[in-house]
Length: 382
Length: 106
Image 1 (tube, rainbow over the protein chains, first blue to last red):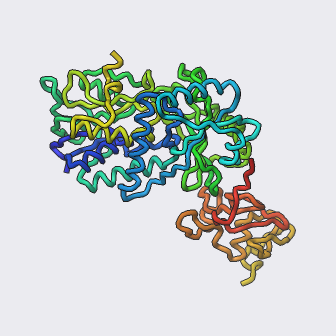
Image 2: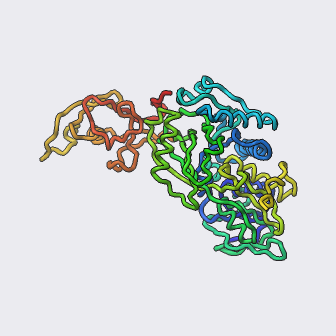
C-alpha cells in the first residue's frame, strides 16, 4: 500500500538517501523513501568504493570525512548484513617530482588544521603494496584509517535495516512535484501517489537540481562522468585503496571538460580489482568510450606493471554531482520550510554519505547537528 | 566406457593423440580438441569451484560465453577450458581460488 503521509519523505535511494532513511527510522520517524530507479543504481553503485580521507581538504571537508568514517564503523556493527568494509589504510602515491609540492602543501595544511598525514618513502610503499612499480613511484601519503567498502552492499544493507525499523522504501517511484503552501512543504506527488509531509530531504544526487526546481530553488549541481574498469577475480594482491597524487594537482583534474585520468586501484572482497579512473564532462551520459578504457589501462599498468596480464571483464561509468567548491550541499534552505538538501557530494558520496545521513537525521530530529552545516548551505552560492 | 569410446567414432578423422595433465593425472586428447572437450570425454565434470561458496562448476555453454569453465591452464588462472585447444603435455588444474597465486610481481 502506498503511504498517504509521512513525517519525512526522502527523495533518492543512493547511499545518502538510504543512510538518511536508516538513521531517521532508527530515531523513530515515519519515513518514506522514493527512488526513481533502483537503490544504489546511479553513482552509489558505480564508483571507486573508497572510504577515504587523505585528499580531503582542511576545514569542513576533513571534518565531514572523519565524522563519516566513524559512522561507517558504527554501521559495520549495527547493520545485520555485511558490506565488506575493510580499513588497512590508504595510499596516495606520488608519481613524479612535479606532484611533490602539491602534496607537501596539502600535508602541511592538514597538519596545521589538526589532521596530520604521514609521508612515507618509496621503500615503505613497496612494503605495503609490492606490485607498484619501483620506477614510477617516489613516495606516498599514508593514512591508517582509510579503506574500501562494497558500495552496492552498503546501500542494500542500509535499505534492509531501514525497512526492518519501519521505513517504507519505494523503488521505481519518481517524485514529480512538491507541494508548497505559504513557504512550507505540504507533500510530494509521485507517479504512484501523493504523500502528505512537512519535511522533504533532497538526496537525489545529480538530479538534486531538478528536485530543487520543484520548490523554486536553483541548485548548482552539474554531472561529471567518472569511469572505472573491473578485472577478473584474483586472490588477495592489493590491500589498500591506492590513488595517484595527480588528483592533488588542480590543473590535472580535467574539470574544464577534457578527458582526464588518474591512478585508482583497489581490490574488492570478491577479488576483482577496481581500476580507474577517467573523467570527462559528458552531461547525463553514462556511456564509456574506447579512448577512456585505453587511457585507464595505460595509466594503471604504468604504476602497476603486472596488471598487463590481468583481464578486464567489464567497465562502468557514472556521473557524480559536481559543485563549484567540491563540497556537498547539506541542510535547510531559505524560503522553503521543511526542504532539506543532502546532495552534491562530488564523487565522495560513499565516503561521506553515511555521515551526511546521520547529520540530516540530527537536523530533523534535534534541530542541531554534531558538525555545524552553515558552510554547506545552499545559500553559499548566492 | 573408455575415454576413446565416448567420442563420436563413425565418420570422424582425428589428428594426433597425446596426453595432457589434469591435476597431475594423465588424460588423452586429440589435436584440434579443446581442453573442455577432452575433459568431458574423460568424464571429468568439475572444472572449478566458486570462490565464496565452493560450489562445483562445469562446462555449461561450451561456446565461450558463460565463463563457468575457467581453469588454471599452464599456470594462468581464469582461462576458459572450452576456448583453449589441448596441446601435448599441457598442465590443467581445477580452479580453486585458495590454491593459485596471482602470478603477479612488482
